[in-house]
Image 1 (tube, rainbow, N blue to C red):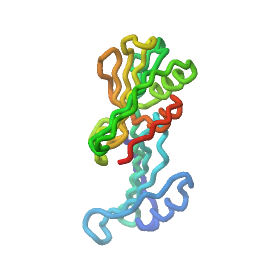
Image 2: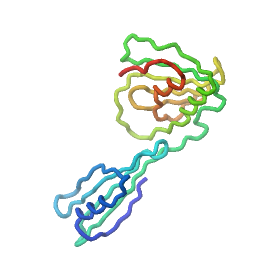
Image 3: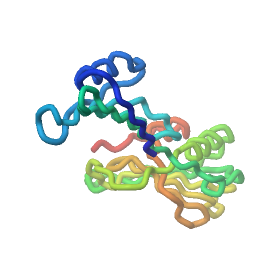
Length: 215
């Protein structure tokens, strides 16, 4: 979302931007500055700033301040730019009936002939609740094109069940390399991708001494 405002201010563009930078609240971080258009008095100058993202709510928060000479004054445009993470509906979360979680690990192409550990089913109620909360607390991934490091297929998979040996209620597969995302399905139906779950956190909650594959 972009919300813009326009003003006229006294002074040259450089002076206006310097005043604005000095008076901006300290919680804003300066990201950069530059110019566009033909060089000289008619050039448009700009500064960019940002606030920290709010995990699971606001993916990015930025401020763009542009200034250009307008006679003896400066025309100023300020854009507040925010992208948000869509809320996950209850229908796209691990069902409350889950009382057991099978944890399994797949090793990718960079692990040679190493074999993954035998899958383990967790039934301790406290651990199951924490694993359910971990997956249900992940935000949806933002749509669009992303630049990712190389992925080799290393994953941790959580299969949520009513009890040991029963059909899967939901399956969450966390990628351990490449883009940080978690593939998620409920009753065999694929759901929107989630932000990446932490492999070490999964193993810590489950109480498993497995090692996360090195890239």
